[in-house]
Amino acid sequence: SAPLFSAIEMAPRDPILGITEAFNADKNPNKVNLGVGVYYDDNGKVPLLACVQKAEAQLMEKASPRTYLPIDGIAAYDKAVQELVFGADSAVVQEKRAITVQALGGTGALKLGADFLKRFSPNAQVWISDPSWENHRALFEFAGFTVNNYPYYDATTRGVNFTGMLNALNEMPAGAIVVLHACCHNPTGADLTEDQWTQVIQVVTQRGLVPFLDMAYQGFGDGIEADGKVVRRFAEAGGPLFVSNSFSKSFSLYGERVGALSIVAVSSEEAARVLSQLKRVIRTNYSNPPIHGGQVVATALSAPELRKQWEEELAGMRVRIREMRQALVQNLKEKAPNHNFDFVIQQRGMFSYSGLTKAQVERLRNEYSIYAVDTGRICVAALNSRNIDAVVDAIAKVL
Ligand code: PLP
Image 1: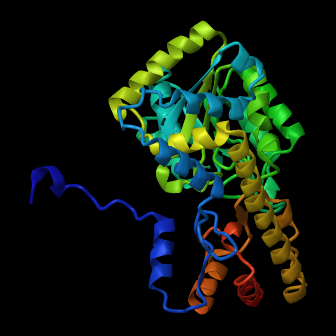
Image 2: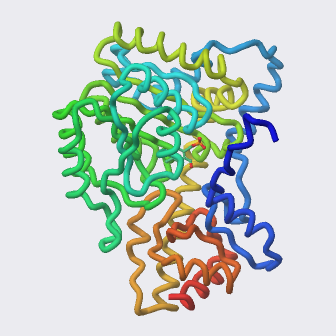
């Protein structure tokens, strides 16, 4: 065999893809996949938002040539995203201390930030929550960082181990890179309170840590404004600040790869230097981003009619998930009265750490064709009015 490849081992399988493969092979017509990371509507379909369809119709009408975009993407997109993330009248936007570049989804934004940080802060280490989105660790490790965990989830309270988290932050060296979920923590669904964020911002600022906020679910918690508040509060505390945001979920544009990386500096002059270097990271990776998704989102965010429609459609997704949380808890109260699932209502976003054990998850899969992640994470957005009864019955039986 070829010498270059002969020593290469098979990479470990992606655990979530494994669930999807097993689900697809299952012949049971009543099978349910709660292992996914996307929003399904009540018909079990990934929606194509009406605001997206209208933006696309407008763009088709224009029939623009497909020249290269600037390295940092569509200017109107970057501006609209920056205003969405920080607020149009915020100090960082007004004083031109924030820079925003179009990125290939939230993942692409994280990777741009990671590559930039590795270049300009090569000796820093990264801290992610325990647990975190499964790609955070590998992404920062592949960028060359040592990645550590800070305590986050407390299985006994099914909430945040805030004391543990704060203690860990208090022990990090200056310059440490702290990845924080801005809202709708994936995978646990457990978010910090406003008061807890105040304390986190205080420690991060005092100790000179570098916050990297990952906002993949803006609008899925308490609304676009409310969910974005943490980012604005960090920005008000001053730079440096990294923010990756994604429209995969909020616009249901998963495959179009639309996201952005924003960086807050202490002056506009510093921000300009940062942008110039960030462009080199982009230029040497993929040169410039694709056009379509960015144009759709820029159009939908900027045209008042479409913007209003987007906000309504996003609210619709948020409300439906909440209703499914309520239904799950209500129905489990009847079917499994000895178990308390009230915490599911407090959780935010698409996911719930259900508390189901690995053995219970296996029974759900083997006996009821209901697929969840081994950690007990279920996607609440995959529940609907037709599958909820079967899911509740099965959970009640495996408890
Ligand atoms: N960050 C978190 C916390 C996520 O849950 C996800 C997607 O699941 C991402 C980032 C990546 O988003 P995207 O699909 O836009 O790359």
